Amino acid sequence: MKVLITGANGMLGKDLCPVFEDNGLYVFPFSREDLDITDCDNAKAIIETVKPQIIINLASYTNVEKAEEDEDTAFKINKEGVENIAKISKETGAILVHISTDYVFDGTKNLPYTPSDTPNPLNKYGLSKLKGEEAVQKYADKYYIIRTSWLYGLYGKNFVETMVELANKGNNLNVVDDQTGTPTYTVDLAMGILNIIGKPYGIYHIANEGETSWFNFAKEIFKLKNMDVNVSPCTSDNFKQKAKRPKYSVLRSDVPMRGWAEALKDYIKYKESLGK
Image 1: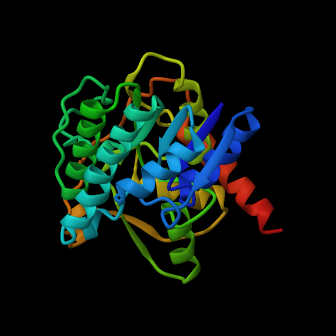
Image 2 (image 1 turned 120 degrees about the vertical axis):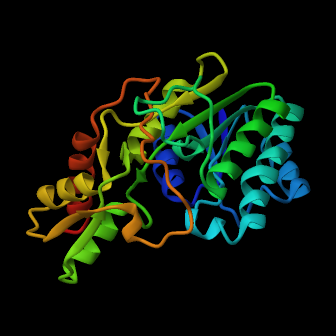
């Protein structure tokens, strides 16, 4: 089975491609430079040439803060680009797998969110991703919308590496303790996506099990790294951010997933092995 992946050079893409290849699928990875989802003609020509049975759209504008000022670009990629891919998937008969976010929710529930919960994004990034979801539902016949949360992976910048980098500079760290979610390892997410394909079409949530705050996430990172770091909890108000974040955005996973702390331990162990 042929699987075409957009945004394959991103953090999730670099972990997802080998997972799918190891499970016997023929993967056709495309970077944003090679396949621009905002250029419908370009995207259609490539997809019609490859003739994939599955399209996995990982191309996304993900800068939450910048989206508040650069709304046009965020919506061009996260809404209009997704609409292009949804239409092409219908025309070619391909199954579309589209990745979305916990930030489509407002965080007022205080219980893990399910796919049937009503979205109500608090920021432009979340709204642009919701509009992308709506485009998939409107234009694609066969689709999986997969929401996930707090991603970190082996490639690219992420919260884990940012915390380690700041700690290595000898900084006293203040980390937000009033936002709760679930850190999700991209390798685990990739396996979850693979396990979703074949289920009834619709919206699914995939995230590692459990919940934590950014502060407690940071503490676990330093514990597993055996780092003695002076880290203190603070509120979101301590950071003058333009984009409002949901206070609680835990997702109830629709496929079995291991706990976030166990996944983090494996991630750190593997990263350290690469450095030796």
